[in-house]
Amino acid sequence: MDTLRVNCPWDAKQTHESLAPYLLEECYEALEALEDGDPAALCDELGDVLLQVVFHARVAAERTDGTGFDIDDVATGIVEKLIRRHPHVFSDVKVSGAEDVKRNWDAIKAAERGGREGALPTALGSVPFGQPALALAAQLQRRAERAGVPAELADLPTGPAAGSGDGADAGGQAPDGVSEIGAALFSLVAQARAAGLDPELELRAAARSYRERVRRWAEDQSRDPA
Image 1 (spheres, helix red, strand yellow):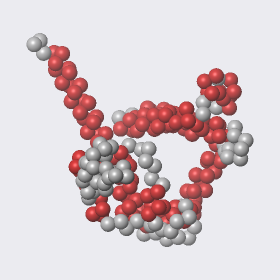
Image 2 (cartoon, helix red, strand yellow):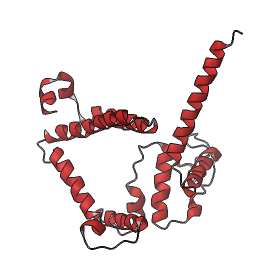
Image 3 (cartoon, helix red, strand yellow):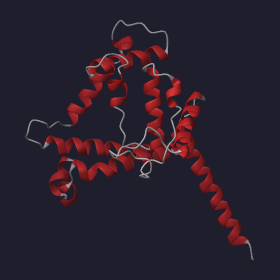
Image 4 (cartoon, one colour):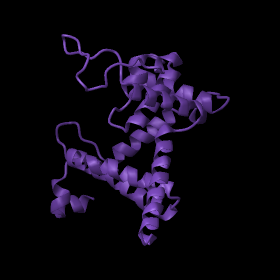
């Protein structure tokens, strides 16, 4: 990467912003290889994901304003975080199972962010809203559940469809409600989680099944002399 950054015109002009789409794209390609059950492809795609990490670190290392970092800083940071958040492995904390590990992880993470355990700004404030909507809804619900938020808050009030412009008050604010479809989708996420399923992966599986059905239909149509 050091060589490419210097000698390749395309690599040399890239920024964090220009690379951002590839970071997301490569993660999805790795996920697809995983879903396809193709270990060789997964290995290849994980290499592409790793390239994005190395590339961003190389770009950051060039900054001279005091905000720079390099790949060693990235690696050191995650090692220190894993040690810090696994006191049952690297220290003398005792746990009874995976749930204790998750609770400790959340408490340590909250302390790192300067918030008290379970505080809503800490529990929900760090959820990235750039992720797909189903995954976003599931993560928000998981964080809220661990913070002790009542489950019934997931039953959203319905109102005019978001972004429709209908029902806004004089100040331009929409009422505290979403469309019936939006509320139903959010409720389905809660149902999936209650069943121990990941809603994003479930919908992806359904989409793949639909794609296969369309493919078979197209093949049948091409064989039909009519």
